[in-house]
Length: 489
Image 1: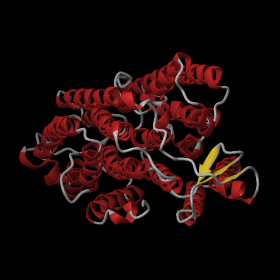
Image 2: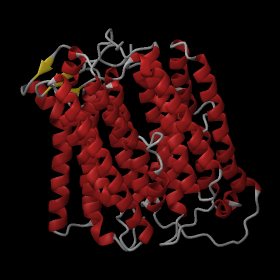
Image 3: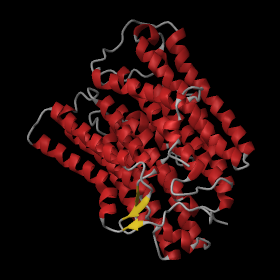
Image 4: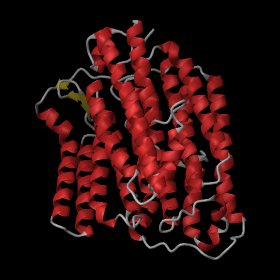
């Protein structure tokens, strides 16, 4: 039995008129920004000019999305792309993730300074792909967005070309990403063979009761699980996160996951209600493996990578609740969409802040991110240690932080769906995560530093501003969650 009563797609559509122009306006702004950066590099304009172009591009796209927040969700381009309403909220999360990755990347690269224009173009291209993925209401459109996101990330993962671990991370991500893309295309082909369409609204109307359609849905789900690093497709995440430049890791951990989950929730009707148990078990196993993997790590960056796997499992629990008894209703998706969007917004600022501060601790070519190197950090870098502690506590779900409210909303979806046992196990697994977050805090505040040497922090202004904004976002979402929740009925 499928979620037949859910109505995710509004009846109003606009093929290629004014509504289509409004839906595509943020994408056009990003594309123009990419071209402007390339032209600026061709005429050898300075880094400040390129930075101004980058920020102006993000600001222009954000203003367009902000203006469409109050508009109802509508379908454009012959019903293949959605804009307005909750889609604009997702877009703002993607822009914020991209801006934070850019800010923490200022001054991060040493040997690659001559290629920073390409770096910024790739960041904007990846952001454009996220917007297409979240708004896609057709499997081909989603695939275009997926590749528009993935190809730049393959390059960015190996951007520190002089380091073998970065090249290895880029190669691993490319090979596994290509495999996931093939799964998605094969699954889409099976769905098309079973139903004769790739449009999500038409797939909903056609029904998916045949074995061929079920096989197609399974392959598509596997591809999306890879992008979100959900069990059993999570093993790439620690290696790729650790080897990639830390600012790029910010974008992988936040924006990429948010885009995949945004589409996954809109396509949740593809899964039968009977799959709720399987999804719940998959989510709990993902949480368990992520937390247990993080417990045995000594490298903090790798520890946070496993933590990201556990957070992906937590978000997946909201999908299980939607399938069981709290379906996605209305154009904005109802409680499950509300929970996932809030969770990913909180995780975007929290994860970006944590990884961003870690990037400040890295030396020129030598990483100083072992847990032992965190000893006594509060004495030498008190503000950095305080900020990192705040982000770790938010990741652990401590009250008065955005992370706590995100977890609460997810588990509330499970309780309303009469999945109390799953919610209890999920809460217990979330408590386990505090063990490795507190290990870092204890090392920073309660252990003496073995030496007095710390790498100088030379990139101050952009990273400091980004860190302050992340900290403010964590506290604001924890104390004033209505800023996002009021957009949902």
